[in-house]
Each structure stands twice: as C-alpha cells, then as structure tokens.
Image (cartoon, rainbow, N blue to C red; front, side):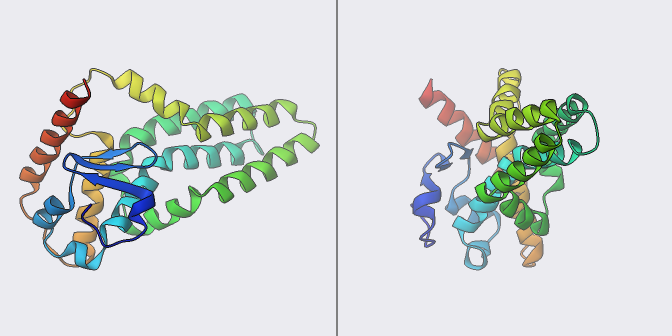
Length: 211
C-alpha cells in the first residue's frame, strides 16, 4: 500500500489493479499513476483524503435523494415525492462527475454520515407520522432502507450491465477530483488521455481476473 495516511488502513486497500474501498467500490488508479498524472498532488493532498472524497461522491446519490424525499414529504403527495426522488437518483448517479467541486465534496461527506441520515429521517418520519400521514411515514421508512442498502444503485448497475463504457462512473468521479485539486493547487495535469487509457486497462484486467 503506497500511502502515508493512517486512515487508509480502514478506508481502502491499494493494489496493482487500483484502489478498492471497504464498501466494495473500485477506482482503477494507483498512487504511482496519480503522481504521473498530477506530479506533486499527493504531497499536498494525501491519497486517503482523495479516496475519501471520491467515496463521498459515489455515495452522494443515496444521501441527496433521501434528503430530497424527506423535504418533499412535508409538502407534496408521498407517491409524487418518491417518484421525484427516484428520478433524481437516476440522474445524479449517472451524471455526478459533471458536478464535482471541492466545496460540494466537503458538504457531501457530512451528508453521507450515518448520524445525519438517521437523525433527518427520524425527525421527518416522526413529524408526518404524528400528523397522521401514515403513507408518507411508510414511504420515508421504505426509502431510507432502499438508500441505506444501496438497492437503487444496484438496480442502475444491473441495467448498465453489458454497456461498453470507456470509464466507469467511479473512475469518472475520481478523475474529476484529481483535475479539480490540480487546478486548486495550480498543478497542471499531464497526459490526461494516457491516464484514461491506463484506467481502462486496469479495469479490463480486473474483470478478466474475476471472470
């Protein structure tokens, strides 16, 4: 493992085929490749923190969709609220890499915490339940477990099976995080296309080994 960040022992494992997190998410890049892609970045931003933010973005579809649902349950019919939240989840899960910013990444890390998700769900579900809105309370509870278990993410991944993509959704996010921090620290990313090719190569190698 090529990192000096002690938190990485709990968060992820770096292998020759990339980085795998404790939640089972893969990012097909290594610290050596990152150093070639953005020389000097890991000296300013440890690999552990980069992976932590990438995981926050990967999980963000669940936390944001749940937040939207909980707010909408206070104002509109619960079925319409659920449809809106699911539609947002579908859009954000596929398009989140286009919205990557350093500031928003810090907010998402807070929103992804279990304490935030549990407390916000408990407060809203209790409110609508005490108001006699049992359907809204039921929808909120079901949606909480859907997000907690990542079932919508699994559904979208299942739909995408067999679709040939140059970069996976996780790898797109990780690449954008590297680009944003390169700009933040005024470090010019080099050989972007070569980096993408290497990511695809590692992803293909992992798939062949697992098959």
